[in-house]
Length: 230
Image (cartoon, rainbow, N blue to C red; front, side):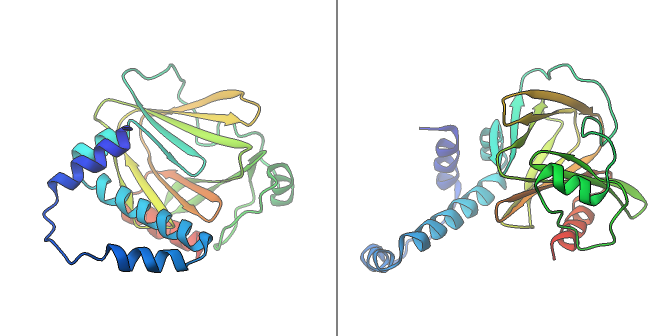
């Protein structure tokens, strides 16, 4: 049994759910009439719902988030952080580019339903830019496909992780030290930065992963994220 399965089983024991009618035969009959694709969607929604509930329970959340994957982002809780230097929000993402140049390198068209900055950054499978919102600089990074991934390593109880009400599934990370590592499809891992401050919102929409980082609270970050993808 995986850590996720154990966490969900533990969660089930804690929930006080009244007994209901036996709907097994009716549910099975209805599911079997649906196309396979529809069944996959239903199962995915059920899984995300279960994860959202589990993440709301501290013991289950702690177990699940030792290693968790959302879109192109992997979150891993470790005993000791790997060595990393403090850098700017855009460190390691390459030189500033025009939007056209960045989209060509990334192979990803930027989704940003807001006034667009003049500078953009790109790696294959990733496009990023700095936004200014409520007087704060916020890094927007969009990842699509499997050319580029991001691993986030946490240590100790200082970083809180909780579900966020945005996209198909969202996570909010706040406080504590963490190390970010961008990884290319070739297997090359480039450790870019360590964050001593700055909150992070990660969510998925379709086959795209969005990441916002900056000094905003959860409500403000979700508000900005919804503006970006509306």
